[in-house]
Length: 335
Image (cartoon, rainbow, N blue to C red; front, side, top):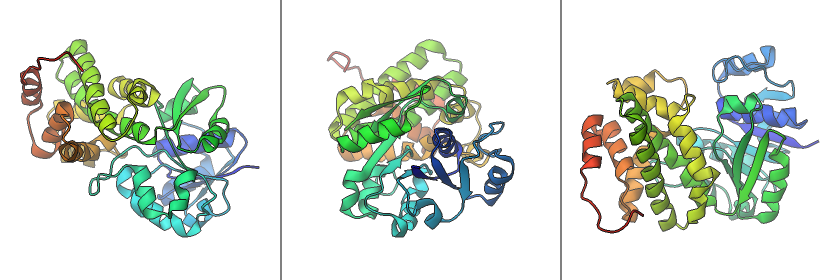
């Protein structure tokens, strides 16, 4: 019996716990909210984050870091990026360096501008470098629970670990591809949320399909520029963790970040949007990280910058669109 710990009882953490339990693995799911823990124990549902989804009896909800992480063959961490460091630090006393860590969190820390793999490296001893992987790609939690065909990317610098995890996660409805480009997969997964806010705002303003296609395409260009500058492989952004996840998040009605953009277009203040959301839209915080990371690296990211200006500077989204469209034209070919 493979023993798996999943840290994070939100929609994606619950969906992955359910996925692994349905494969016959022994799964402990750490949940912060006591009410959600009781719901899963008693009714096998998570009404707060995945309403209407019947969960496997193989999931054991827990609220102890020791229970979820001790004596596990795999630990999957799926918590919001702004609490990732704190949660990882609290888990560390109970972890064995031989336990593979898979991270499903998509974000960039505001204070340090670190990706989640970089946070792990700063929190845990160096021995975890060969036991780390991240899971990303176009994958709405609800559709995974429905067993709709889904393809994702698992990134690890350890080829042997990647191959092992690929088999562990794969199912006839859940296909896993592998890569060694950890930073590329992380940046693609985090930054697509920022572009999705822009796409939602564009749709909400009624600008149509031309504008959405332009945002997705040029959004991918600026994500790739930053990624390559930080050591990622350009082809990563042409795959599931890049353009695949970007298309899904910019166009799918289940996208929380796209919904934020739609609300912005309606004129709803950002603090009201945040307070009215039961779940985290990572793109809000990531837009701040993207803005500062672009400045640090000297990379031009005009769409991400305008999303930052709208969220943190109160810029009118129509003015942001006009400024994007009237920027100085480049003489060279489209990059």
